[in-house]
Length: 478
Image 1 (cartoon, one colour):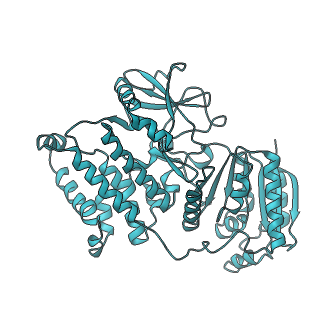
Image 2 (image 1 turned 45 degrees about the vertical axis):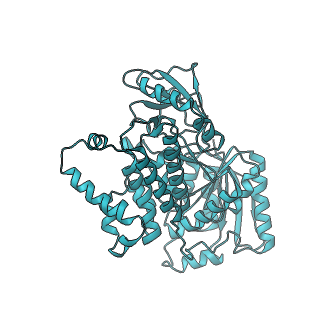
Image 3 (image 1 turned 180 degrees about the horizontal axis):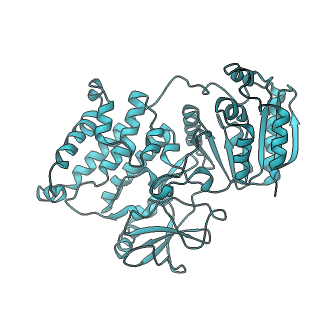
């Protein structure tokens, strides 16, 4: 499993990637902005077997496997692999790293289908995948791509699919629970990097759920067999090999899972913000002026990476993407972001990455020493941040003081386009009406402007004709 860093921002010379230590035959590191992988003797043999078959070039050309090549101009870190390094690979850089607990239902389903396709096609090519982790998949916009070349190994006849349990725990069960029970998988996967166990999934599903396709085999039976075998000291692989286990059984299981996963859907009729457009509270003139203000700011910065925080349906992400190389579009409403993802996928867009996340509780560092999965801000500094129609939700709904939120934005050390809806704005009034009158004394325009100017140099500002929304373009103070 790997997490790719963004060059020029948080990379250090020969830095071992903290999220890739679990594979004894493969370890990712960075050097000079390059993404590299050290391989053991066995890892090198598996790599050369993979790169020699047509499957490798086919997957790369289809955009399903990250472009990878062997290099000899880089020395791997001495402590990268126990037993020494036999080869070093280099990978294309993924524009921005995301994690499954930041994906929407559609993104996790598409990543699952990619994983299954790779297993099936690898078997046909005499290869296999060691594991089935969604952390081996990243997204280039609306396109999933498999990034862990070190996961491929040569097929061992008579052995089962070792990644089946992991696939169920990190792909299948999260999708089942959201599709069947409306249980959001993101908090669960953020709470456990290992996913949902068969026993946990069985405990949540009802008796009637057991009649759904896939539930009996992949949940109930899986849970029962796991409980039975954990009470025994036995070599399951040896037993299967002696019983004449065939790869055709794996292929049949994978094809069945592909049908089950492809049939799953999550279609709530609406959510809090799914019917809300970022231009809902504006007339046409104000909406056009706001779009122009954002477009002018993006053009002036010529950013490589833009964060659109509180992106809603991605309207301003699309404006930013006209000039920026890549846009990370973040919103807490999973349904709205899922719809955006489906639109981007159908358009073939690869430069807007939609993620779902509550910015009052953003993704923290997780895993071993809190470093296997990095916090949002540690995955690459944005060159421009859009913060439109968001502050009132963070400050009033989320109870985050205005100055504290601006401190967090200042910590990104990036230029900023931010919108301040005044207390007279209809949306703000609606939020304030739910609170006690004195709960938000800091939500005032004069206090916001003072706090902003203490942290940023305001380049330009504009009050929209409605008089209840103001826009600011600012750069961080040195």
